Amino acid sequence: MKQKTSFSTYAAIGTMLFGLFFGAGNLIFPIQLGQLAGTSFWPALIGFLVTAIGLPFMGILAIGLSGSQGLHDLASRVHPLFGITFALVLYLTIGPFFAIPRTATVPFVVGFEPFIQPGQSSLWLAVFSFLFFAIVYYFSLNAAKIMDVVGKYLTPSFLLFLSILIITALVRPMGSFGEPTGDYDTLPFMTGFKEGYNTMDALGALAFGIVVIHAIKNMGITDTKEIAQTTWKSGLFAMGLMMLIYGLITYMGASSVSSVGTLENGGLTFAAVSQHYFGAFGSILLAIIIVLACLKTSIGLIIACSEFFHTIYPKISYKSFVLILSLMSFMVANFGLTKIIQYAIPVLMFLYPLAIVLILLGLSSSLFKHKRSVYAGAMILTFFVSTIDGYNALVGMFPNAANSVIESVSNFYFSYLPLYDIGLGWILPAIVGAVIGYLWKDGNKTGSAILQRNAENLSH
Image (cartoon, rainbow, N blue to C red):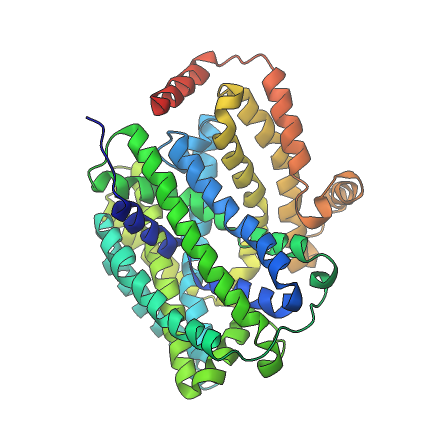
């Protein structure tokens, strides 16, 4: 008998998914956008939502509707070796190397460091990050309880404290919208579009796919088609909630300029707005909001990474991986937020185009009958562009890493590759690669046939 899933189930999973996605970065980007966009609020916000909401939602759909069991399964459609390599690199990047350590350093820098005596930051960062990851470790030990921990407790608590600030800003606006600055004056939609693209939440969508699927199965849903339907409906709920919060935070930023001025980054803006309304208590409120935002995301990332690594190396238990990843993240966190960001940006710039193309291929797979050569062609040509993206970001951080040969390739891309100057140079190569792959005689018909059968099972 076909299983029926209630709206409350979609809402529960969607709330959990929102909690996994919505970290400190998701607070900082829109409030800064609001400050800079001013009276161009609406076109800038719509552009931001197209990519900040659209790309993660497509990532969720790619996992749910493709019939894959997660990122590794989806990436293996290109080639088994690519599947394991790409999945390992992505999970390490959003796991213990960069993203998870950052979830501890951001709340420390924003919420606690301003109250610490100069010269004592390193000691207190070690203390804070140890306590932070001890809590993360404890709540990550039982992956089956992520619905309760993140969906029922941490996310509602986060929304409660955030709503105190947002509702206050709505009831007592700080002022009217200011004049748009920079590119928001002439190209508000495209500037917002690019800012949403830069949140890089599509990587999180691929990583959290395995968590969502396991959570759905833990609720007793086992039918393949019902899992796919539950995934996209829960994703729609989560993205709708994110859209609402993004809009309100952007409004808060746009109305704040006349009272707090235009500040350097969104973290400073949030702090200034909190203190404007609540004085000294505002700093405490901000610390609570940031800690809750990062804590729930960190738990989700530890669980996602641990489940992936346990799947790849089943001889090592899931709980052992939770401990290993928590310890690694603690050690990396103590290098400090600045260094983590410095080293992360080149890797993220390399991975992001590949992740987006993989998502688009997963969503459109039925159109080209799941041919592996289409996956391979699109990903190979995208790789050549994303490698230069990563290189440019690396040289921007570390000028001594410049190489004359690679510089000439980069200059060629800037001169002749459409959209490369706004970070979207991968689009044309991906399309060309997909077309070549479609026209190519596919030698691996068995693999394509298996993908075709899996897709047909979803439609029945």
